[in-house]
Length: 170
Image (cartoon, rainbow, N blue to C red; front, side, top):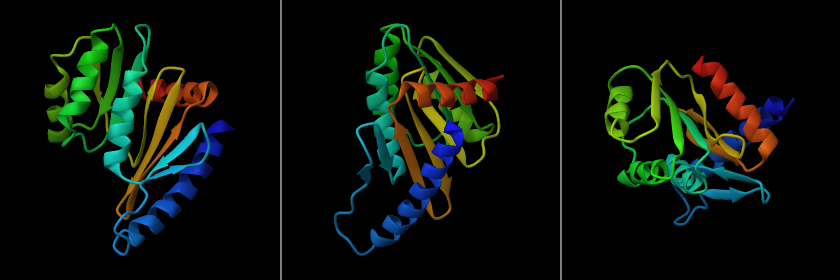
């Protein structure tokens, strides 16, 4: 049921993202983050999702596992890998599913020196998830006409998204 609700939110977010993406060409300062509630944010660009993921990692504690999937696993900023290295030093572990090929190999080479990182290659469709085990998650949808991330800071929702990730991992 929760996945259906997140699917509906993601669909609405895609429509909003498409609209705002179109409006970006007309507005000098478009809002890239929509605050739906204190537990839900919608990001309308990949840059915002990556920044939110790095910020989310900062909230991970030593018993946390951070997980994520990437399809186009290139051009992440150095700040994302620096955030990973910092929280790895506190005992946080990581699991990432990356697309096979050059992009996935590039990501693997960037994280191979960070302790506690496991990487698995697997083809990923248009949607994916990033999160902290049992705490919060960002559900991401990309399409030719836009990029949308739905950030949910809720234990139940995050647990469901993490279970979906773990099923993909196996």
